Amino acid sequence: MTETQRKIGFVVCLVTIVLALLDLQIVSAATVPIVRDLDPAHGIDKIPWLVSAYALASAAMLPLYGKLCDVFGPKRVFTAAIATFLLGSALCGAAQSMTQLIAARAVQGLGGGGLMSITMVVIAHLKGPEDRGGSDKGTNTGGLVAGGAMAIGPWIGGLLADHANWRWIFYVNLPIGLAVLATAALTLHLPEQHVRRPLDHLGAGLAAAFSSALLLMTDWGGKKYAWTSPAILALALTTAVTLALFLWRQVRAPEPVLPLSLFKVRELRVGFAVQAILGGAMMCAIYYVLIYLQVARGIASSSAGLYLVPLAAGLAASGLLTGPLTARGWSARTFTLSGTATAALAFALLATTTGPDTSLWLIRGELLLAGAGFGQLVGRLILLVQDSAPRHQLGVATTAIRFFQTLGTALGTAVFGSVLARLYAAHGPGGDITALARLTGAARTDGIHAFVDATQVVFWGGAALMALAALLALRLPKAGDTKGTATPPRETEPVPA
Image (tube, rainbow, N blue to C red):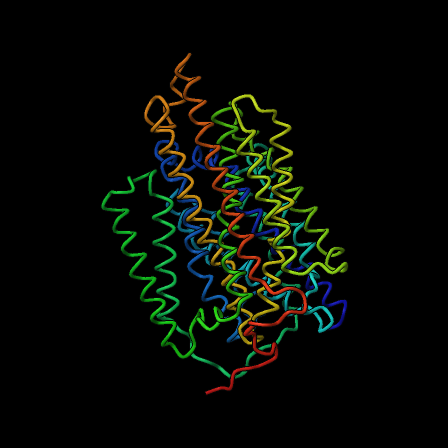
């Protein structure tokens, strides 16, 4: 590829990232008009499935997408994922019932699972030889784009819902996506595999079953069903059995979808673990700060989303700074230690200062600090994994780190939510947090204090997670130290059977 084609390819990848991030943010901001139009009587009960259907389909496809990239080449899989996403978007816009919309969201999720993960594989292939081995070309700009999309997503969703029809939330993907698809087809010239290797369909199916059962268990547990209910216990058993079968299959499959040999590489082990922890911690910062603002401070949900702007700004700023800092000699180990320590400090400040009357500007400042920590990790961990993985397993390694982030987000949400609910039930009036809205006078004051105390414990949990990630980062080799690294040569290709 020429240098011009590479630059166009990077722009295509950044626009694809915007599509992936904006879709999640926009839909969450427009659920009310969707329900009012499609099913005003019973649609409110189906709103969680608008998110869950997309998330389940997306997570189920992640392991398979990585293997498909390594078997067929990233360009074909990239364009197929975008096409599937656009088909799902068109079906969502044309839906005439909540059931149709949820089914269309699942189709959209099948493609959406590749928008972020395969895009990072494409970016890795777009780099020239001079960019490999530590360069963050595309990563710092990606951090800026991701932060901007996180900040403006809810605003765009509300704008479209208030001044246009909610269907444009999905239709707006079509012209942008078609332009991306056409540009990718014309300008991307990426390596293709001409020797076909068998796909591990059984392993992909077991991975999909395991991730779906885990996501449903963490989404329903403590909310729709009690943690000890038969439904949740059945999902827990399904999760354990399918995970065991998946690991058994990966040991025996000739072409596993997630080769366990990847875990022999120290950088990959640490990168996967820290990314999983990061998924849980970021959800803790975003979700529970928003809950605090709405429950304890009485801020409307539409306005509470604006408090994420400092978090997005921190993400974008630290993403932009990774380039200059890399030029000054910062290694993946340095970024990981600095990012985890910064995020841990932000969580500790949230835990110690968050109260019923805390300055909202202080909350904004702490979210800015948290974003600065997260921004040092998001792109750099992917780069660490890509630079450490064998070249012929670049696809599975890249999608694996996204897969572990998804699982970490699900587990973190469930654990923190359970802690918050149990602590409030033990010390607050009314039995559960939902009763706060009905309390008045002294009872409400006591309830707010009990909720704030429980939220502080959740933030301490986030600090502990990031401290654990910092300890794991110490396992990364220092710059120039390759002792204990089992990474094969980057250009090594498997010998076809």
